[in-house]
Every structure is written in C-alpha cells, then in structure tokens.
Amino acid sequence: MPEIQARLRGRRLAAFLDYDGTLTPIVPRPELAVLADGMRAALERLARLAPVAVVSGRDLADVRARVGLELVYAGSHGFDIAGPGGVRFEHPRGLAALPALDAAERQLRAALAGVEGVLVERKRFTLAVHYRQVRAAFTPAVERAVDAALGTPAPLRKMRGKNVFELLPDLDWDKGAAVLWLLEALALAGNDVLPLYAGDDVTDEDAFRALQGRGLGIVVAAEPRATAARYRLRDPEEVGAFLEALAGDL
Image 1: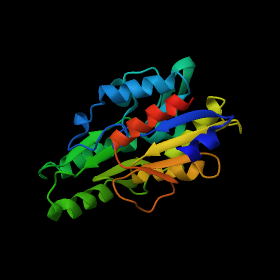
Image 2: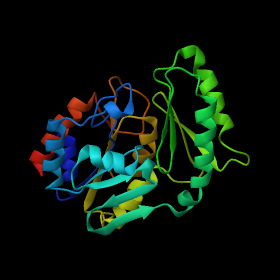
Image 3: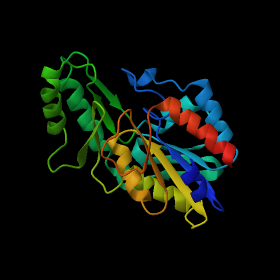
C-alpha cells in the first residue's frame, strides 16, 4: 500500500475490476456468483471518489444486474460497453460476427448434449463452454467440439479461461483494448490519472499488459504465478479489504 499510495500522490485513480474470481469467488456455475453486500458497499464507496468500471467476460446486462450500481460496465470481454452519461460502445465488427456465433451455438448444443456437466452459455458477443463439472476424461472431447465450431474460414477464435473455452469474434480486441478505449472515452488518458486493473483469469492478462508503464496491475491468485501484474491479492476477500483501504486514501 505505501508504494501504491506514493504513485497516487497528486493523481486521480481510475479503477477497472473483473467480476468472477475478483469481486466474487469462483463457483461451480455462473449463476451462483453473487456479489456480497460488503463488496457492493466497498464498490459504492470507491465509486463516490473515483471512476470505477467492471470489465467482465459476462454478458453486459448480466454483470450490470449482479453488481446493481451506477458504474461503467464492459461485458463480453469489452465487446459491449455502457455506463452513465451516455457511454456506449458495441464493437461494429463484433456485431457482424453474431451470425457465426449463432451457428456455433447451435452446433455446440447439439454436439455436447450428451456430455454430463457441460454448460453452453451464450452471451451476446461470446459463447462460453464451461467444463468445470465435466469428468476429466471427457474434456478433450469438449475441446474438439469447440474447435470444430470455430468455422472455416474461422470467423471466431477460441480463448481459454478457468475451466472454460470461449468463442468470440476473431478480432484484435480484448479486455486490455476495452480498458484503453474507456480511458479515452472517459477523459482519463492523461498523466494525471493512475489506472488500476484487478483480475484473476488469463483473460485479464491483456489488461495488465495494456497498463504496463502507465498503471497498476493486480492479479487475484491464491499462489504466486507468472503474470504481467505487479501486485497480488489472494482472493475476493482481500480485494474487498484493498478497495476499502484505497477509498480511505482518496
């Protein structure tokens, strides 16, 4: 904290936070990830003092409803962004890829119908195949089905997360690009702003890399691991305590 406080001196904070595994613990099914009242209170307090955005792989409407605060939200790994004051972005080439996602969804639901424990979750701009509850012996078959649904030529790309494969438009766009877009859109791109990003998954590494040299990256992980983030918090409980401490310094 002393190092972070020193970097904040004379600068404004802008906080970007992942949802699953960062604001809430990792749970067996996506619908079980409920934001604790204490975490919501910490977010609300911080948002009164600094811009706060939640950047998630979840669908925009889903993550906004789960947090329930007037913040900026970037859903579908940043393909779909909305916030107060008319902030709105839908990736135009992402919109063009929606028919390919529709076709991939139909194909995967049919191909994986007999795999116990698999969950095919459609979001507007992405398609997630969760295999956390699939027996390890069947995981390769799940991945083969995902690969087969990419299309030829492939308009979609595969991304790995924690026990999930995701299909999304094959574009140079990710959470890092979304954070940089938000810094510009919210007039936070100047040297007087210190952007901070906290996240737990491999998809958050893009945001850590995007902020290297200009902001703070905080990985949420129980044990040290290879990461582009400079700092580490062990779990969402530590994230909540950190946000409270951060708000107390602003």
